[in-house]
Length: 133
Length: 246
Image (cartoon, rainbow over all chains, first blue to last red; front, side):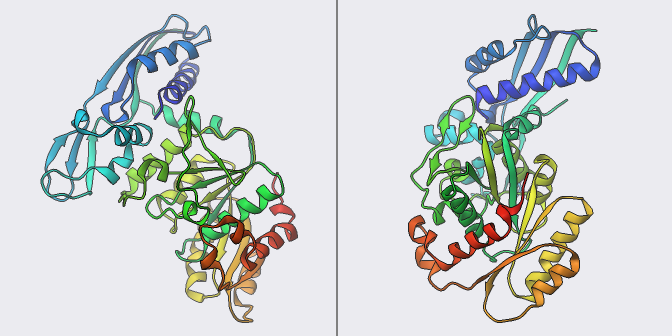
């Protein structure tokens, strides 16, 4: 997912969560981002600061943790991590937008199967929100 | 705790007046050709139209409309390129023409991602080319695209009808609006499908004869627009007041 689209989605979700939990001001947001998203952290952080225009998030601190991509072959059970540097530029960009297209480009290094599962490092989670009621 | 992608999908679709999923339950009945022809016909009428191909494992609207060379613009997400006056979005921009086997959860994730990143802007119509079946993609579209209406395609075959009937039952059960049913590849005079559709209480939108010239027009949108098939689609749209959306 694109950094700006992701930042917009994160801000929108935080606002919704804050409303449901009755928070007036957010102090800290703990975010986890899967490595497979191939997010440029600096661009993402910049987008977050540009998009947080409400009083709700003005003083919020964003703690962002990148979670390593882990893949498990459904065919032979082999587990491996994504070696980012070995992925070609155009493929990396495609995976950045739609991580599932990894199934078009990557095969199990042991048995060659395209039938594998991303067991870690996919997606974005808001792990925790700290704020004032 | 929470998937942020889900909260942005409504925002991405909010300026689209009518969202029509062309679906069937059955494969090979002409969904992609009908979705492409509807999008082209509405664009010819100067409507602002988007076409979204959600058939991730067998996408084909890009071949019908010859969209192989286009690329989306990256701007705070993805802006679909406008080709033949249609804003066009497909997974092929990212997967190329490679085989991409996806299991259920992976297909759902790809669908969520595509809906979350695509900035359609203001559209009169978004036509969605659905994959066959009543599995993940159908359930995801119903769940994620709240204003979607389904246009169903069937061929004059009892086998096709029985499969489409299951999709109809599902949509009726879930209270999802159905635009109506198009009978494609009509070869004889049988009124079997028309009667069954009317019995169910759905709108029979019209029939399209089997068009032998259609295959030759694939990949050439100008020629495609001049086929009997495309002419019938224009007739169906007009007869049904451009499908009477909002």
